[in-house]
Image (cartoon, rainbow, N blue to C red):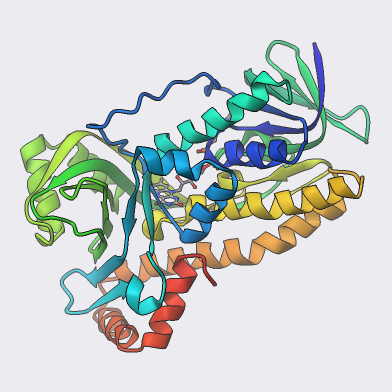
Length: 400
Ligand SMILES: Cc1cc2nc3c(=O)[nH]c(=O)nc-3n(C[C@H](O)[C@H](O)[C@H](O)COP(=O)(O)OP(=O)(O)OC[C@H]3O[C@@H](n4cnc5c(N)ncnc54)[C@H](O)[C@@H]3O)c2cc1C
């Protein structure tokens, strides 16, 4: 079987799905290929159970999800806007606080469960699937086909070949497409893992996001729509993470409460916990010859500021704008000129954020007394300088 369309997207994660939706809304024909995700995937919404994977979304990302007409659906299920953030240095004496009101913005961001976003995107894509503008294949690719320079083909395990003007790699950190295209990467493991879980907190979180930088890595306490529930991202050296995962629940709860310095009282695990090995990755090129990368296939960062997917959504916005313009001018959607332009638009920001995350992680993990002193001094100084604080907050919220 042969399928021909404008654009094929490999990977139906958050970024691939949103990329598909923008293109469909702008009249392109699209094929989505994913090895697992099926468009009829039902993610049952349970009012009592929170997804342990949550994302801190910047106001810029929620505005983008509004333009995709999925934000209303997401909000109708469950989100937690947060207006305050407290970041402190464990065992130090300094902290920095961010407050929406004093920054002149209504909120700092939203904490949203990943499965709610995916469900909203799938529901919207269903319309295009039904009207034939979208083709969806649950398959694995096996090779690329480049017989004709005007199109690119991707061959699947059942011999189906899909031809398009452009092939978008949204297939995550271990991107098959990136390695098939021979695109080199800068890569390193942080030698840390992050445990994620839903947690009951004794004290009301008051729509505040907390981040404690301690020995081994940061602990983020992210507010959920229930005032006594939070989601944690607890980063530790990988071996310590493994030990924490192996603890029986009361011991885990005790260790977590201690690490949080009781800021929200006693913390108690609700449901399962899972850990993710952390890495830093930057593709040295975002594509060429009808292949382009978006999201984690192009860059992966430390989750300490919750910016990874937010950067991916910004990739989608930038690439889509170029493709829509190119389409309107009836120019080639897969030209190297377009791919290079997209790369130039995204690389500086993506690389700056990746470097800042690595530096912050290093800075806060250091036990060197001099660095500790500078760190405490820096937090206090920044906290006392409203303009500098505003600049930092705007960077983190994607408002810069
Ligand atoms: C602990 C942790 C906390 C985080 N917190 C935040 C946060 O608060 N805010 C934030 O913005 N970001 C956060 N991130 C980052 C965020 O999770 C990622 O940036 C985002 O999920 C990447 O989405 P993606 O669609 O690019 O890739 P993925 O979610 O990895 O999706 C890739 C898709 O491609 C498919 N696929 C892969 N290979 C193939 C193949 N060969 N054939 C077919 N299909 C394939 C997969 O099935 C999958 O559906 C966090 C990350 C971690 C680890």
